[in-house]
Image (cartoon, rainbow, N blue to C red; front, side, top):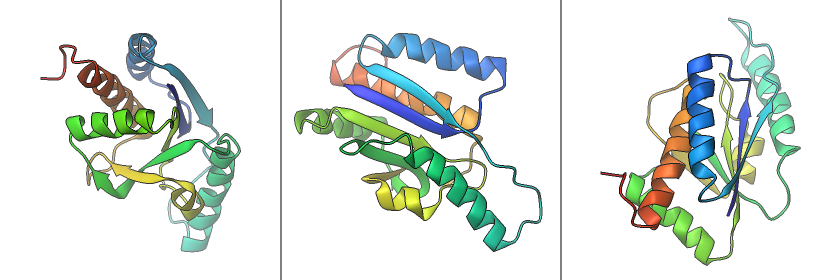
Length: 159
C-alpha cells in the first residue's frame, strides 16, 4: 500500500521531526509512506472572511497539485467522522481489499481546509472536536496509521 500525507507548513520543532522520523521508519515495514509539505500562506490576525477564504484557497491549490487522479483522499477535518483505532484499521483494510492501495491523507493549515479539498476528499476524518497544531497532528496520524497496520496484522501494540 502507498500512503501519502500532505500537510500545510513545515514541521519546525525537532521533537516532532524526531517522532515523525520514528513512525516513518516503523511504517516502512507495512507500506510505502511519503510525506509532502506544501507552503503555508501568511495569515495575520484579524483577517476578513474573504481574506481567510483566499489563504485557504491558495493552500488548497498547493495540496491539489500533489493529488493524482485515482488516489483515495482522506481529509482530516473537524466535521469529519470520528473513529476508534479499530474502526480506522478496518477502513484501511477494506480499502486494500477494494484495491484502493494509493491513499492520501490531508492535514490543513492553521485556518483549516478549503472546500476545494473537502469536495475532492473521498472521506472526512476527525480525530477530535479539538483543534491541534498541524505538526502534532502529523505525529498523531502517523501513529494511528502504524497502529492500524499492527491491528490488521494481529501484532501486539494496540492495547
